Length: 208
Ligand SMILES: [Zn+2]
Ligand SMILES: [Zn+2]
Image (cartoon, rainbow, N blue to C red; front, side, top):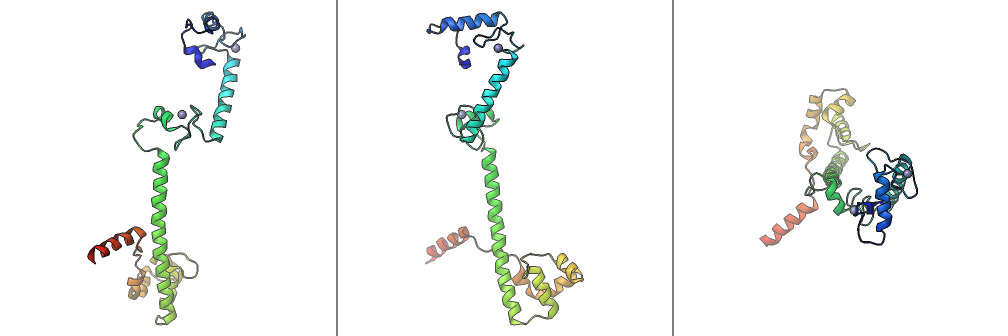
C-alpha cells in the first residue's frame, strides 16, 4: 500500500524492484499509482484523479470506523471520548495530560443534574408542607393563593415573589408580607443528599 512508499526504495525486500520503478516514475514527474502515466499534482505523489480516489477511499474508511466506534486513525482500538483512541489522541491534543473535553462535559452535566435533583427534591418537600398547611385551613384567602402560586401547587411551577405579585396584581412587597409567616417552610433548604446521609451516619456511629 501507499504507506510503504516511506520505506527506502532500495531496501533488500523482494518488492524492491517494484518500488524502484515507482521512485523512478516520481522522479520523472509521473503519478505513483500503478499503471498511471499522468503527471503528479504539485506537492503530491499522485495525479488529481488518483488523489481524489484515495481521498474518497479514506472517507469511506473513516465512516466505517465511526460506525463501529473505532479510532479513525488506526482503526484498531476503540475510541476514547473522541474519534481517536487513547494512543492516537496524544497526537491530536495540545495537552495529553488534561482530561478529554468529553469527560469534562459529562462531569459538568452530571453535577448540574445532581444539583437540579437536589432543588427538585427540596421543592417537592416544600410543596408537601404547603399542602398540609392549606389543608389545615389556617391561612386567609390571599395567603392561600400566594402560597399556591409561589410553590406551584397547581401547575408544578416554582415562582418568585415578583411573578406571584404580577399574577395577583399586587406588589412584590405585599407578596413578601403574605408569605412572611411561612418563611421557614418556603426557604429552599436543599434536602440531604445520600452523601450527606452517609456522612451523618458515620458521625452517628462514631458517637455511639
Ligand atoms: Zn494517477
Ligand atoms: Zn488509534
